[in-house]
Image 1 (cartoon, rainbow, N blue to C red):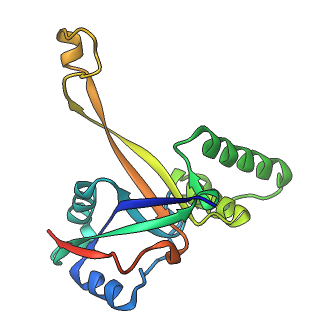
Image 2 (cartoon, one colour; image 1 turned 30 degrees about the horizontal axis):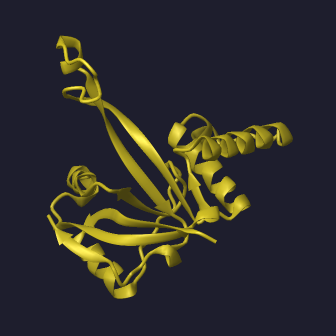
Length: 190
């Protein structure tokens, strides 16, 4: 059994919450219908600046001392749902199609049915429970872009100089907190 070791996992929060997490060795997870990767603990992978941006821009944290928790997460490969791969996306899509086909009489709550994030959360929570996945990863793309030189272009010209680099963020949702190495958690003040 191979493990996937994710060494750069960043979680933006308040200093008060961070102290509670460090003391209890437990993240407080609130069940929300708009958690796009399901119900769990969310981390930005490989990008501390995204975690800083998240905690700074979230109105819930306004006026509070903010920080980022950095840690390592280890996931057994067969329990890791990677939605950045063809296999992961195909398995999820097949599950959703099979569910809809087998349950034609099941009507989703109109609130869930009309909201993409709620639908994502609903289906991924069902899928991960059915398959016993312990963590899920996906790269989200923001419509905002960063203008930059296209370093992959063989010949630089005016067009390649204005090529846009997408504003991506890789997110990890951990369903089983036993995967989090609480001995490696460190607090970074911002």
